[in-house]
Length: 254
Image (cartoon, rainbow, N blue to C red):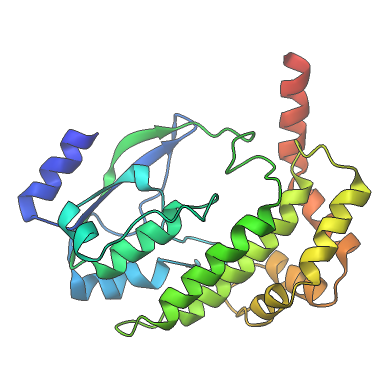
């Protein structure tokens, strides 16, 4: 994998190389855009519009994956701009690192037809399973990304940021529906209500643009703004039914 990526990086002396992935061993992830070399101008035209939050014609999210295990970065890029993993963030640490590297880069190579990584989904992992105090982990991350966007002049990411912030808020609420969450329903609802009472969360959701969103996110926005925790929980529960069935089956098998 890394030999192929390093060869591609060396051929054009690019700042970032990004390859593709198999999900659960055999499902190829669709390429985000044509494979090949992108200079800064093409990066802003093709890559930047989907860097924080991108959507297809049906409103489905097609944001570029921010996983660092699919990329190689030129060390000079990282050192020149003093880009580091922030130890304050214990969830989605890859996002700010990838985002800052990409907006500072001047060249990019995408290997969308090269499926070099095999990703096995684990719904009990930190990123897929239930996360304790997820809102407490995500809120500082959103605030940090907002500050980066506010101070970055070459490209306007504000519309994307408003969508990304709201999606993170919804994800923190949906976290209470995860099948490996051991809390009672009353405790789960109490957590959702506490997020709904947060003034920053309400602000971020209110600023979300509805036009590119799927219907479920439009419903989520209404329920969140009206602080309808029970209805939000019920809607999210339906979305997690298949995952819960898989989790219960795994528990029986073990």
